[in-house]
Image (cartoon, rainbow, N blue to C red; front, side, top):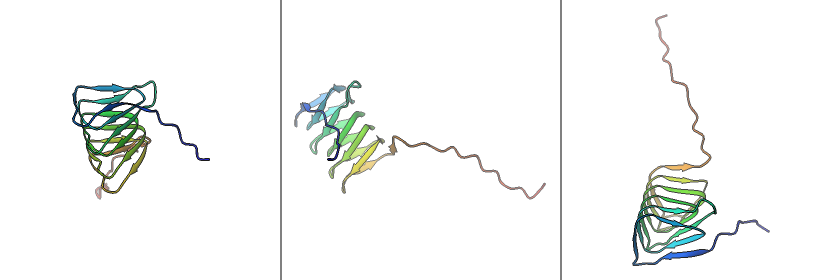
Length: 132
C-alpha cells in the first residue's frame, strides 16, 4: 500500500570494543557499535545504509545515503536521502540532509543544511540621504 524503498542489507559490522583508525569505505549496509577514527563513506554506485548505535563513536566525516544515528559523531554528516536521529544521538559538526527525522533528546552542535536549500542573494541596502 505505501511504497517505501527497500533498504540495503547490513553486511558489515564494527563491533563494540573495536577501534578502527583510518577511513572506512563500504557498500550496502554497515553497522557501527565500536569506534572509528577517520571518515566513513558509502560507495557511490549504490545507496548505502549506515547505522551508528548508541555505543558507537565516529571521529570524522560521515557520508551515506540513509543514516541512522543513536551514538556520537564528531565531524560533518552528509545523508543523501534520509537522516534519522534517535534519542541518544550526539552530533558535533554540520549536518547535510534531504529528509530528517529527529527524536526528542537528540542533539546537534553545528549547522543544519537541507539539500534543497537555495540561498537567496539579497541586494545591499542603501541608506537614504537627506542631502540631495
